[in-house]
Length: 266
Image 1 (spheres, rainbow, N blue to C red):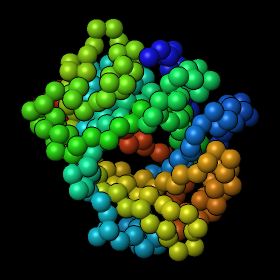
Image 2: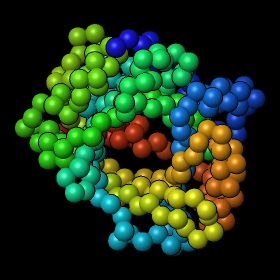
Image 3: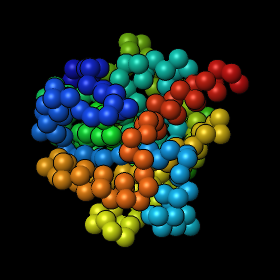
């Protein structure tokens, strides 16, 4: 499976107040090649309880998940533009993902885009965006747990197509079974349609090893709907007390930094 390595020049500062004209033009180019868009915002700890109440979020309806990342302790894969992870879901389900981030959709081969489970998504948050591509596969939940506990090799979680993609893009000489298990982390995920908003929202509360948390709200749409849905979401969330001007924290970057730090200090 051949594709060029992901370019690393499409990440934008998520704390910037607005997009420049050049950034907007780049975003439009990325949207033209994307399959889906996910609009995200993280909720600051100050005022979080009020936001939860305003949105009438019911924690008893949340799904418990576990996620672990696979990388070296110095995050060599992440620096190379690769994210490798697996999740345990409820009812014995699980999945594994190899993600390239950031990418330019125009640089992805047609063959890769036709692979089952492959998709290109633009993640956008206040002041920033990034385009990623991922190859996802379902996997048995109990097997995921065994890999998390070090009882099965990492490669068992990935299909032959995922392994081929990894081999094609990973730093030379680095194998899946060479990677450390970073995690797992516990996550609460709630999907709901709040009053006053016409689309489903997803709330994810991530618990990190240093005791910190991230609460993220998100909604998905098609590339063509992006600006309309973004405007509607901005107006709705602002009316419910979400501070859209607050600094944004990305779940994966935070997780990798804290998990690698915990691994090197344990």
